Image (tube, rainbow, N blue to C red):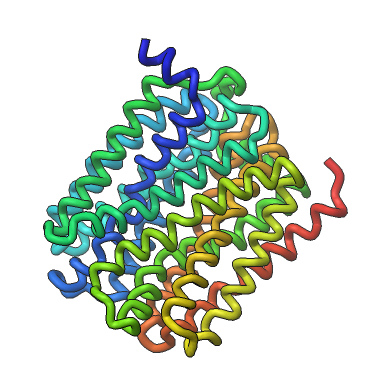
Length: 393
């Protein structure tokens, strides 16, 4: 009975589960001020914890590609198991936060589990809603964005409680997401892969010039996106202090700056129906690149104006992501869609590591000027996407 009800609204169920599962991603960033105050952690420590999640995600996606899990087993099973395990290791950070290197181990394992949530969520969307993939993936990535921002909201909503509570709240959400996907099951529109799937299957898409062009745009997008999300609480803190406002506003404003990307994803998805996924991806990438270039030169502006600019940046920096996924899914070999997307994600997220490392370590000496280190992402991404115009399917 419950399954039949959920299957009437598969896209809603999948994006809700994505919201819940990906709340694990930046769960530490949401309680960063408390960790900094109580445990004496620095901006460099924040970068290391975030980098470790990214490393776990990369290893996980490569593992999926090497073993062929994404195309050999039901996506709903992988998603549900990853959500449960991710919830447990995220909760385990409560006991290891003050005990390096075990804190890094827990964040690595969290990233490992996220590899079974985000890419498999994309495959579930494709399996349930094969038409208007760009729009459907826009909702999915929009929920990823809200999930990323959720820890900031949980911290902002619990200012008087210990930092462990919002962290455990993320774990509870992940458990909920895994449960509803397990009940929903897989969609009927993608065939099960064969037992022969392996890393070479995932690399098959890169032999296509069209897939490579899209992947290049996605790689540039990744260089900018996660470093920006890591910097968001630091950039927001600067403006809140300039306004002499209450520090309790920092997590709430950080949530808005990141979470407003949901509107960018959904709006971009609707525009992709009228124009095209390529049209939306190019313009979103160009807008975020322009803001990236201009931001450090505008530090003289009123704090309110810069917070509005950060929100515009937060809207555009993620709006292209679902369109890249839609373009890549269309260009990948049909029988190896899951593995191809997993490999693309692995390479893209590998590029987030140097971007996060550079910006988090240079924040103390360069301040807002570290945003210029993100600029190569949009520039090179747009250069790669230009090749699509000269390619045929």
